[in-house]
Image 1 (cartoon, rainbow, N blue to C red):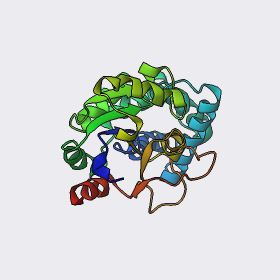
Image 2 (tube, rainbow, N blue to C red):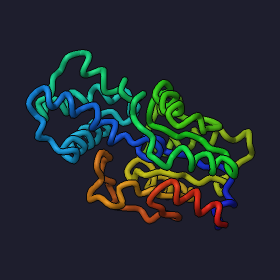
Image 3 (tube, rainbow, N blue to C red):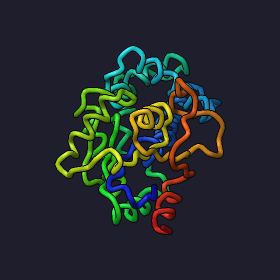
Length: 239
């Protein structure tokens, strides 16, 4: 199936379009330096973040990613020796407004919007996705969030809800392609549900899974595989 045969692209936002790893490091590092932990590497910070998120997914699987962030910070603070003031705990979620887009995201989304309906499909809450959409220069035709669904990826219910919201456009399963970097949250479950999936392997030049949980069943082979969103946009234009 050619890329342009799809009609709608559904996007994971955090980690695929927005560089949450850089955003988390940018927030945690000054706090670590204040408590004498300037020796922490970026990878140590991200591994602590991923471990905390994994634990919370197991305990409270329906809670949105952004609702988890204060709890993630508390776990990280205990492990890494960070301060636990109310402002610091709340600040990780509020820092979302400053999380950067990947360098290729904005231009690639503008190109893709010429050919497809673009839908955000995020485990974040509505406020956070609106903030990230501003950072991305408002590329989405629609948004579906964990706050709307009252559940999170990788729960299949998220994808069922998403398709329900787009039913007015008459889309069938084969009309969609799900675009994401997270094997844990997105690629594995979307593939199981019959979606065409496009893995944007943002960490292609790095070991491990960084700030994302490790996929329970290993790496799922996607239908399409690119190292960046820019590569996907170029492949579409070349068809």
